[in-house]
Every structure is written in structure tokens, then in C-alpha cells.
Amino acid sequence: MGKLTGIEVSIACSEAVTLCDVDVIAAYPITPQTHIVEHLSEQVAEGHLDAEYIKVESEHSAMSCCVGSSAAGARTFTSTCSQGLALMHEIVMIASGLRLPIVMAVATRTLSAPLSIWGDQSDVMSERDSGWITIFAENGQEVFDLTVQSFRIAEDERVLFPVMLCLDGFHLSHVIEPIELESKEDVQAWLPPYKAKYRLDPDNVLSMGAFAMPDYFSEIKKQQNEALRGTLPVIKEVFKDFGDRFGRYYEPVTRYQTEEAETIIVMAGAFAGTARLAVDTMRAAGKKVGLVTIKVFRPFPFEEITEALAGAKTAVVIDRALSVAGPGGPMASEIRSALYHEQKKPAVVSMVGGLSGRDVFQEQFIELVERAEACVASGKIPQYEMFGVRE
Image 1: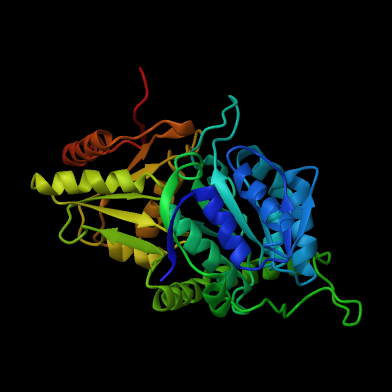
Image 2: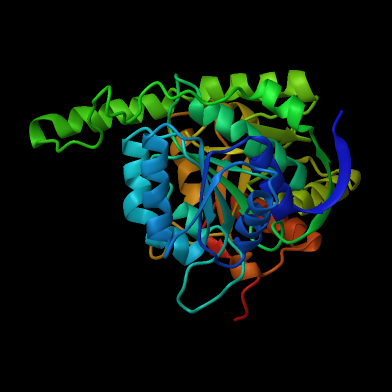
């Protein structure tokens, strides 16, 4: 049983990284991620963590540093968001292609322009095809727990992929919550020291990131894709093992009140807590409404989503990112794809809102359910709708 502590969620993330005994931290500040690396600098300076804390000149350099340290066999961490993640993009792709088990926290924030420091999920969605395992946390306890689990997942020899842990900027990163912090002894007993199977070593020479001619590139990408898709069973195994040890269990897809639900809200991130209250209110009024939250977005949990939505008439997918001039919400398009070959499937209604830090209240979730049900009943389902927008 861990110690229940009132703590800022960003600091809880840093505490988890410290307990994981990382070797290298590449740090560059950007709102709203900065508190994570600031606290880690204190942990190193005060002797609570024996790690190389590298103050780089940009986020591009941060990820480049992570690639080098991870390739050398070091347990490696960084964090960023928004334009910083966009600046990393070139190297983010390389980290995955080289199968390096880096862990990166992303305090999700909108991408400019116009300039905004507030939170949504547009930054993470812009990287959804970069080849990283991508996990969404809903609350502070999940941030702490999933940070620890991310290292175990990434470093498993059956995985060896980088992990991106997403926590909603400000709505999660800057709030203080009661979080059960596990002891260093318990965490390190569960998370063994990292011993890299493949690493750059002058005494045992190998190549990473070699040039690939067209005759080989497609086969390499096919292998990468199949390997990443194949990590889901390992992720589930780690989730269960963590639950058996610490009593808190996780699933790639979480269901709430979905039994006999005719309409199901689907989403990821911190706003799911408000959606859960809305579901309770609607259930109390006799409406058959449920909630599905996506914890693991990559590899995409096709089977789990299909099972979770089976029997529903309507799936209201709430995206906090807009696929500009595309199908609307990126998550909605993924779910439509997952359900495409199913004979019996719910109508998918894509709703986009909560952009750049705009709140979504319980009453709005209820209105979105009513709006989606009306669209399905009329047979006129829009490609997507943006909600909460002034006309």
C-alpha cells in the first residue's frame, strides 16, 4: 500500500521517474510540461536520483540526446508538448525505427497557429503514425502508475519500442490530486534494472539506423509495423502484473456503464472524468448511456474497441483535436475504421471540441448524446460536428 499524498500531477510524474531510477534525462522547458523536468532537476541536484541531467538547446536536441543515450543502453526519459513535440518529429520517427525504449511524457497542448499555451490533444494526434506506443492517462494516479509501467513495457525484449505517455495539459498536469505514491523499494522490486539486449558498444560492434535501399525498406517497415501491433499482449500482461502487485488494474480500453447501453461516449484523457458524471446523471434519468475510454491508442486496440461497442446503437466519439479538412476527429476516423467490417455496429458520430483548453461540462456531454441520438434517428449523420463553437 503506497502513501496517499496531495501532489501536483506533473510532480507525481517526476516522482515516478525518480523511483524508476533512470540513467539519463534530456530536459528542455515548454509550458505546460516544464514542471516535470524542473522537479527532476531538483531530484538530481539533491541526490535523490543518480542520473545524467542534460540541459539541451531545443526539443530536437532533447530527442536526439535520448536516441544516443538509449542506444548506448541507458534508461532514458524526456518530456515535452505542442511545438516542442513538433520540433522533435524528425527524431521521434528515428527513435521508433531504431526500436529504442525511451519513455516520454507529453503534457498535451494545442499546436499553433494561432499561438496558444492551453491544452488539447492536437500535438499527440499529429504523431500518431510515428511508431510509438501511445498511452493516455485520465487522472493523477494513472499518470504515476502508467509512468512506472511505461518503462517496464518499453524495455521488455518482446517490445523494445518507445512509449509516449499523454497527460492533458493544465487540466491534469497542473492540478493537485490525492495520489498513492509507491515506495522506491516496491517500485524497483517490480521494475528490474535495465540491461539492454542491443546497445552501442566499442567492444561488441553493431550498426543502428543504417542506410536502406528501396529493395529492403518496405520489408523493414512491415516488420516494424507488425512488431508494434504485436506489443498489445505484452502491454496487457504488464498491466495485469502491476495490478497484481499494487492493486490497481488497467486495460487498453476501459468500460463504464456499458451494459445494455444504447449510446456510448468514446474518448481519451482527463475529460473522461466529467463524462463519467454525465453518464451517471443520464443513467439516473433512465437513459441507457455508457462510456468507453481509450488508454492505449497505439497499438490501436481494434478487438477491444469492437467488443466494447458491441450492441450499442450510437457511438459518440469526442475528439480534442481536429483533422483539418479531413474527416473531423482523428479518433473517430480510427474507430470508424475499426468497425468497418463488422456486420452489426453502432453509428459513429464524430464530435470535436474542448480545443485549446476550452472546458467541456457535464451538461454539454448530455447535450452531445442527445444531439448524436437525434442525428442517428433522422438518418442524417454529419461527417463531424464542432461543438461549443460560437456561430
